[in-house]
Image (cartoon, rainbow, N blue to C red; front, side, top):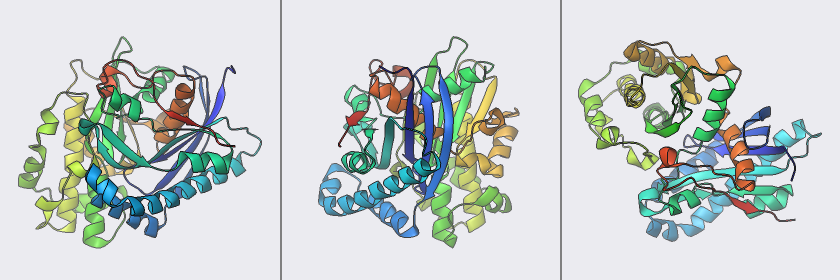
Length: 367
């Protein structure tokens, strides 16, 4: 068995904006070298189809009812991932990629009902690329009593160890949904979804003004937070629920905001993301020494400034440690693919609620 593997992680998250691709070299343990990162944007038509499928598929029955439509979109998503593979492979033509970590596109996450559905055909991806594909990372965890998410904490742990962080430390990823990884002084790991990240904000500005996102948080900054609506949103029992815990984008609704202006709704939803993250940080027994932010939401200055203000603490963007905050999740799936291939654990009781440390990932190899 070789000591180090070169792995390509492919990630398309709840924001559904496109595919992040990262090539990493690792032994599946402490050694990690990031070789390259690349991004491929989804066309608006594919993004629209994905949103439609996600809105339609609210249960297993609906998955069966719309199976034909799902297969059509899955085919498009898979070929987009093949395109992402070709794009980054062309830049790194001297590298021999051993594995592909293929997360796929989540369309329904229902761990309490025993399933989490990601579309993307690993057989097709393996056939077109000629590579071993590791996919379906959540299934084994859910089968063993876990919630199948978050999956990135183990990689976050490696980052915190590599930068010799002052523990206790947290990494917060602000993607479509925000999640937090906590590492205590004894290197013990905990994680959970804190609440909405960019997803509701993106949905709101798209609905009100046909924009993709609130760039730099400028719309939120121009608006006024509606305290009544914010308190209603924060009354959701999820925020008081003990971790580990996880969310699906369908757990959130915009109904309460209909009477608000574009700017006021954006300010209110952005503050919801802020407050949920602060609740998450403050939920740990020991005071956190180092707070690091990754993901697309780290570029939203309204969110970052208000986290600092509420916590009255300094926080750091992960980029300050020479990690590209746009690609942490795709790097993580490259790393998790190696661990899965080596049959090493990828989830733990304090990260997903699984009964015991658990392996994961389906191995596919088609010549």
